[in-house]
Image (cartoon, rainbow, N blue to C red; front, side):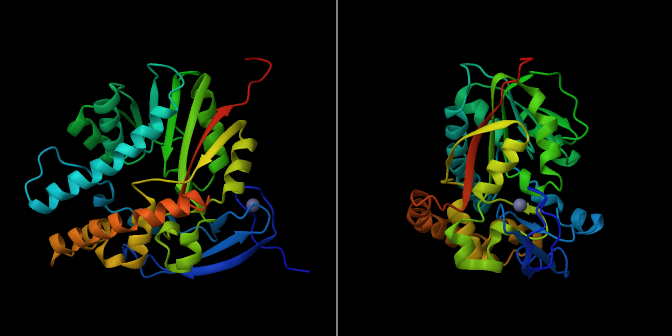
Length: 322
Ligand SMILES: [Zn+2]
């Protein structure tokens, strides 16, 4: 009989086991190591113990809230802007596919410095709002794009019931220590027939199998809970949502996660956070070339249902009162 492990933050099972240990090898914000456990029931992979608050604060240095300047001055910055905007178009297409009506009220939870919302407005005419826990990022989103961004977090945000038709959460859920409490808060903000669109890394991916503890998708210590499809389905059901079908391809995320796992030193964000400027332009060109070259592999992985990230749209389960 196995000893019970720490409680799974998704399904509360104690059938959990130590999986791996690693440091913040990508961004190097700390020398500490962090432990990941896997749940035998839902396959969620979660940190235990959770990192101390001061370590987590240092894990998100300012350049993490990356922003596309409207008129970048250097060739490297111009290249990066073209790259980022091209990649984000796919996210806009995925969001548009899930518009529940012609002119939805949109909320992007964890909007960062607002590049998705700005791109959404440019390509669809829909001016969504953002919710962002980093006050600095929220300010940048307002200043750079004139977006309506609420600075605060899910626990304290106060929106009237039924305020939004589409709520997007791209790479947010894995950063939250109490994901179910977060979804319980968000659910009433959706209108009847509204849609919640989530994207998270997929621990059931080929990438995780290939790279293990060196897979950037687990992003220690920033990702507190990493999801399998089963874990995400459970979490959504427990929070009163009916998940729709999963999609496994993301132009912006899947091939780059393979590239960054292969060559962490070429990762543009890692270079920026570590202040490494030597050969930055060359490394960025090589990195973006590698990402392009890896897209067919990312497509193959997605076609097999084992993509590096997963999108799922979910609708609130109707209750008698609605
Ligand atoms: Zn579990």
